[in-house]
Amino acid sequence: MNRTSKIALSIDLDDWYHTPMITGSSFSIYKTVDDFFKDWKKEYDFITESTLKVIELLDRYNIKATFFVIADEVERYPKMIKALKNTKHEIACHSLHHYVPIDTRTKKETQSKDEWKNELVLSKKILENTFEREVIGYRAPGAYFAPWMLPILEETGFKYDSSIAYNFLYNKTSINLFDIPTYPYRLNKMDLSDRNPDSELLELPFSNFKIMGKILPAGGAFFFRLLGLNYFKIALKQNLKYGDSMFYFHSLDVTDTGIPLNNFKKRPFYWINKGKNTLNKIESLIQYFSNELTDCITVYKKYILDCRENDK
Image 1: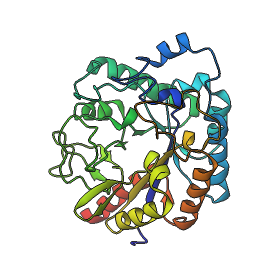
Image 2 (image 1 turned 45 degrees about the horizontal axis):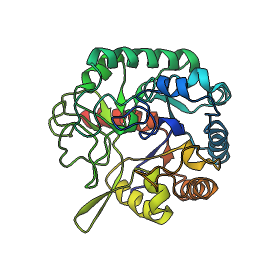
Image 3 (image 1 turned 90 degrees about the vertical axis):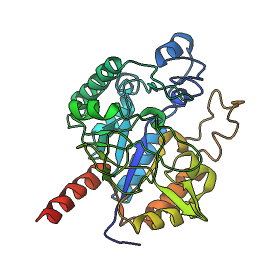
């Protein structure tokens, strides 16, 4: 393991109704979050308490992380937002409403580029005004990403993206991916690779695990709950040999509260191992990689500094 390499630790603040089964995707029960709230009149906040637990855990180990916040949560989650504002963790953008702008099956646009840009500009403005700090990082809802997003992200003032997952199980981008690295890299606007980069945007890709000729997911979240601590120790150690890496989870992953609609026929194991058990495993991961963990913006700045040093 290369001890100079870092792991960008990030937490996505999706609540249960942001999952693609409920809202925002081509197969959701509700098309949008607004449609959901027109119908749902019961309790909806299942992440505030778990987010507070995560903040306390990070404080205990003096670890800085990046929180990818959905901008419309600013109004709906005041306790959580206030707690985050009082920390020094990085705030990054996870869209305005967690709406996926490409069809999850065909990968064709479900939202015009102008609509997507307007929402992106608004979400960045909301987050920067609320947290009173610059927001330079973006993660696509559901990690569904397309090349046409790159120039818009650059134009809007974002410096890095962390959405691309490269493995043999799934591809959420609108193109075929080939040989995507696990370390940060400048993007090629056509194929999203690190070959002949022509974008100023830096990609912090999801981690993966190469074994027996296969490339398995190792970004975190559901796969962390499914595959466990030891799998991710091995995978992240492998990634760190090549450079900086990334690990993420949702605060919803560690909530002990039962999800209102937890018996999804399409994805019956989606909430496997949710709760305290996963929180304990995340703490064990933090203990194991305590010297390597940092926030995304630190990894971004490290890349910029390394580039300057190499240019001398």
